[in-house]
Image 1 (cartoon, rainbow over the protein chains, first blue to last red):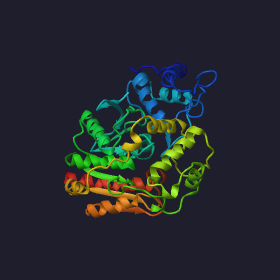
Image 2: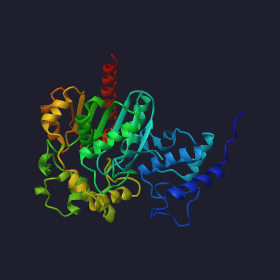
Image 3: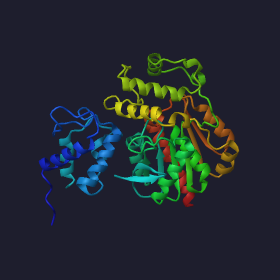
Image 4: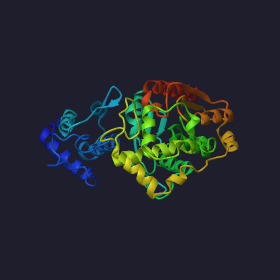
Length: 97
Length: 291
């Protein structure tokens, strides 16, 4: 028996809560708060170290296991230009989180 | 979060894979992300267990007031390996991370399967670093030095001062020409947060002085490392090549590689060449260990 994947909206909400905690000491909060459309680099001020640290937080707090984040954050050996909260939620859904 | 305690500091690390251990050390003003995209995952796929971590004062590791000499940071590496139960590893360091790796190997040669230094200036062997130690400046370097005030012709620590100047310019929001190639603080919103962290490290800790502390003397390096497989890979356009020459004279068994068209940040700017070199080196050294 397999467990049904959490709907994307629920995962988005979990990611937003985690992001709010993760960035609480930063001075980069976007106007209107973090939404599904928020992009990590352009809107939240992430740099690559923050991306990989946030992935660790997602693994620990949402997935409870290691995830193949390379497929999400890297393309041709380089970081992707940016990543939205929704893209992350969709990725987590596909991973069965 | 994955942190290990090292002499009172929390060291942020990540580890993946199964197989012989490889530990990757980044340079000043960088963090473990320097290795993540370009090399760490490839090494995992090649059959190694890879550990990357943020040096004290960098990334998500603790910024303490002291503890930034290569020797002190080598103690952090020892504590990290102890915490992760890694008895012996291939150790790879870029820039100042290579200086840390060298001090670790000099202190604990029995824990180093092989040592790989990528464009590391070694304070003991190259105590000063001048503008004319390297070839002509790139357009980007020229712009940085023009925007920052300094008597660059007479600067004895040009590499460190360049990095400091670039960090301060980045924090102030100064307009610098965009570069096609990788540059420090060249990502996200201009790498402002990483630049701010580096400026804090310089302004509020002992790091500026400690970065220049001499490590193990040449006789000890020769004595301790004569049996350690050693790869010295440098960029022909960098101002660290004097360290490669001095290390080669001191440890003639070292394999030396000089990529003529590469600068100091070649693990990022010449990824494929670096990855090929690293894979070849680690594969050969691992095979020899197993035979």
